[in-house]
Length: 255
Length: 254
Image 1 (spheres, each protein chain N blue to C red):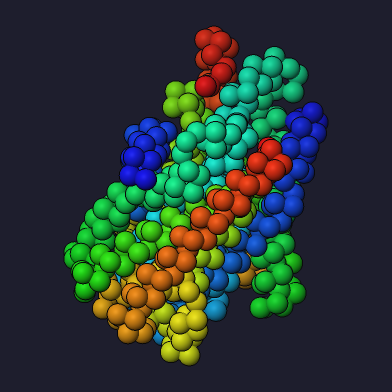
Image 2 (image 1 turned 60 degrees about the horizontal axis):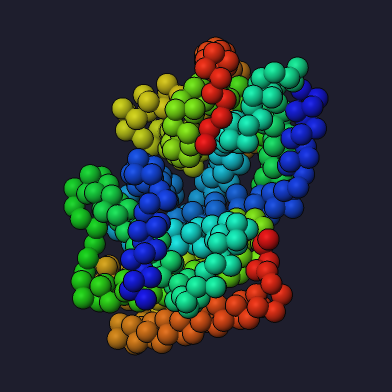
């Protein structure tokens, strides 16, 4: 798995020209500023809005990177690369998870740029109330994000143009997981997030950074681990069933 | 031009269902911003600002069609080798690019306009729904400065061999400086100055006045006419690019 991860990270890094990658980081930071301004325009204090939505935007950036990399797999399907992947000794679900994780890791430098923009705008670092919880939450989120996008890869592979489906996944998963922190919402709206399994893997990143939790932190983290494990099983099932379908029909769907 | 229109119609009609789906993104994304604003203000977000951003999302899409989309179409012509044929054909590449832009406006642009018009009509009344459609028509009719900017930037396309960096900058430039999601007045003085040098904000303001104010302020027409200089410069630079391509024979981008 680790070898797969290094190889996919290297491949993903090589596919992006350095200037384009650096420019992408710069443009991402401008988009973050746009989102902050657009939300703060509703009347909130810009600094307070940034404190509330900053880590949510980081979560969104990482997940979005993974989603679009998963959507780009339909190119691999159409060009026949996936046929070679399944003919190789690599296990499909490990390969897909490694590829998803690698693309998420490539989004991490954007985090540095976003922190720098935050510092330039407000003269302070983004909130980091509970670093230990934050590190654990980020790991749970990265693992869950990789499992979700690995499973989504095989779903996207059925479409010739998966951009609309990728947009739906890109927005539906983070929003239902509390990328806009439920703790900032009125309680009657916030309580509904407790029923969403994705809440336990997405929102803790913001909760631990701001120090404000919707439910008990230990319970939330434990539930997050269970949900992440469930998502791992889901990605395994998605890869295995796609593989069996390919063996039966001889195509992935997008050819 | 007729050949270009036929080619563009065949191309875009294949994606009509997809573009109808995408058109729901404009109200959806503005609803996401509204939800975040609602959370940030403790449930006191102004609904008029939501409509401002919903119309702004449509204008953002139109601006992308007038700028990035033209560059991507040109890139596809270069990559596929069609540009050399278009240069030699009576259709001329600029006419074909214009045809692609017009057909994209008529297909995808209309889808986005309709979804937002329905939203605004429900929120403010049917007259405002019609206002959104008229605003989109006005935005399309006054988008020449944006097209000119894209044509001017096309000069670097054979050198950078990838429109992605240019389109990334254009897209974020429209949204950052164009006042589509917030008024330019929220920006600091220096950034307002940069915004005034670009054609986006005046263009968006004129269209939004029609959509949400049901008026077409004459005072906006002066600045818009001034920004037409972008169109003239763009066409001139396009002429230089076409000439350099003919001389060098390097029509292809790999």
